[in-house]
Amino acid sequence: MRILVTNDDGWQAPGILALAEALSGRAEVIVVAPDGNRSASSSSLTVSRPIPVSHGRPGFHSVQGTPADSVHIALTALLPWRPDLIVSGINEGQNLGEDTIYSGTVAAATEGFLYNIPAIAFSQVERGWQHLDSAAETAADIVFKVYGRLPAPWLLNVNIPNKPHAELTVHQVTRLGRRNPSPGVVPDRTEDGQEAYRIGPYGTIMDAVEGTDFHAIERGWVSVTPLQLDWTHYAGMETLSEILR
Image 1 (tube, rainbow, N blue to C red):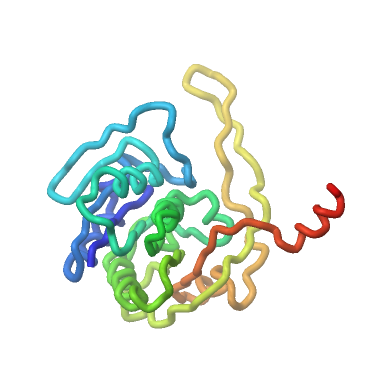
Image 2 (image 1 turned 120 degrees about the vertical axis):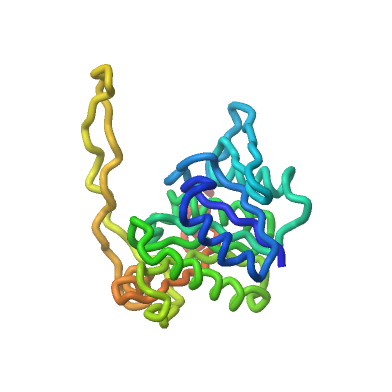
């Protein structure tokens, strides 16, 4: 089995190193990831300049671009083979509900899915890398359990609580929950005194009923959400057609 590993925290982040190590014992692994942190970059591609690529120790490649850039370049230029699976993460921090829209971790997996390759995004719920080895072991468990048993291509978003592996006994299949809108930006100043703003904190949780990713994480379960990319609002098509007729 051949796996492309990527992320949005950077190619030397603890999460990607732990994930690559956990997978390499049972698969051929190549890492292609951004040269530094590109969190919340979503699916942006760099089209305004060339994108430099550096090569580290064998099997590790650094891209001066976004997570989506990294996967795009890997699939169309760098890899000597087409991967069987793309695995993104392990991200430092949760990707739940609307986070998936902004997440560079999920976007990297999505870029592979657009090439009809199965893909999984993995995140740890809390920041700080506590129990990272446990999260990597859990991620590998899921990879080798689901691969080859779902109709390809498929795209999964997985959130893992920061707990010992022995306590991660429940893997709950979930839908995305919802947050309330973010409370807004935080006023700031640049070093030279120019007016500036920082993006504020998450919005509070609005939909965490049973069956959602928020509900699973609140109970300390691993949340596994299958994603799709068709944004078409089918229910609104007939009404819109009537209006525009």
